[in-house]
Image (cartoon, rainbow, N blue to C red; front, side, top):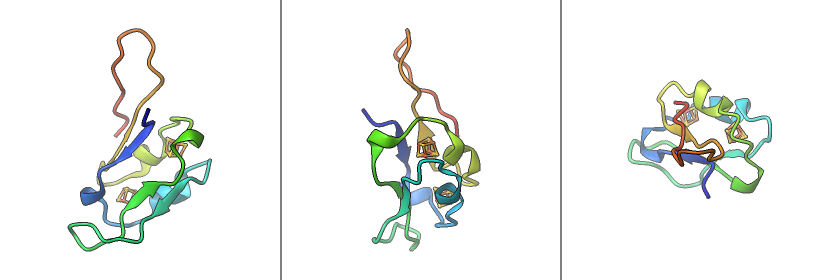
Length: 79
Ligand code: SF4
Ligand code: SF4
């Protein structure tokens, strides 16, 4: 299951999320997005702890963090 999702085409490559991640799993992709920036992405979903720090830092609300499912099966959008 994806724990964190990046909407690549909203990303402007500011790298705030890279700095925010305590697990150091947010990286900048080699390819360019629709706006011509290298978008942020997650290298290893398995290491993500769904802390939401990356989503809180993102000025462009490009990141969605999914908390562990509890009883209603719905994800949480921290962005
Ligand atoms: S939710 Fe936390 S651990 Fe997961 S990618 Fe974002 S900052 Fe890193
Ligand atoms: S904080 Fe948002 S806009 Fe900045 S690099 Fe990360 S995803 Fe892209």
